[in-house]
Image (tube, rainbow, N blue to C red; front, side, top):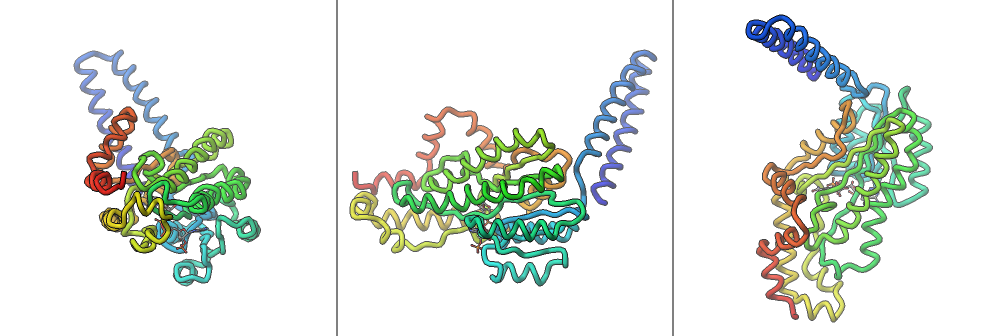
Length: 355
Ligand SMILES: NC(=O)c1ccc[n+]([C@@H]2O[C@H](COP(=O)([O-])OP(=O)(O)OC[C@H]3O[C@@H](n4cnc5c(N)ncnc54)[C@H](OP(=O)(O)O)[C@@H]3O)[C@@H](O)[C@H]2O)c1
């Protein structure tokens, strides 16, 4: 309702400005140019009205949304927000009897349903699909939000192949599995597919190799899907949050001892324990410096789900980071790689490595 009021206010102020403009033009240039200007501006206003009457909505009445990873963080908050907007929310949870899932079930409306949904398990996805299909509201499944994810940090060569597989299983293949399973419903409603990626999909930061690999793969999948699904009037958006560590449960809390114990003798010789100590506390303090609430991300997700023309990408960072990334993406690799040498940890690391 507020959005509708805002739209009609801006329409009135646009019309008043138009009349004033036309009077000025008439006084200076005569009647022909007034007719021409009125015609052009009329067309522009009509285009604007048609855009606003597009496929957007301000409430979710009779439409459903499936969200993965609702036990905590963005997924949990989005489930609550969409529920309060009137959507039928299917909240996929890794532990449907865990604290987050139970709180959602208790505090949500009767429309909100908690589902057991480990995105790495075919069986969970199959059962969730059956349950969703049997409980769809009149206008069907409007959207899937692929939000479930894990993160970890560590030098690229510290990770085992199992670490890479686990990361890809959840962040990449989990989203692909869920998307493909629910796509027929979303296609039928000409709805939305949303993918929660990260700045690390394009920012090749030290110590984020496994996570970056999974999120870059996810974006490649989402980008191809967007092109293909446009023929069916389905819109695909990618959410790229920066650092929201303090606002969610994403932070990996591992001790220096745990990292050290995992290394083989060769790596213990090259990366000494003191460096691991410093890198671990640097990583923890960087995470603590992030945004303390999820509002910016939830607003972007709601926009992706309800706006007539959602964006392909939502970059959710501070103003300074936004400026940095817009320049960063234009620079040649030789410079973007060199950017990391400015970081204090880079020099400490180099000095401590056994070369
Ligand atoms: N927070 C940030 O700074 C940040 C930045 C960029 C991108 N992201 C992305 O945002 C998304 C949401 O993360 P978050 O920050 O809200 O962290 P979060 O609080 O840890 O939420 C992630 C959710 O995914 C669930 N999950 C983990 N493995 C799963 C699986 N196999 N199947 C289904 N669900 C699973 C987790 O369940 P449990 O709680 O039971 O483990 C949790 O509910 C992730 O994709 C993450 O990569 C976060």
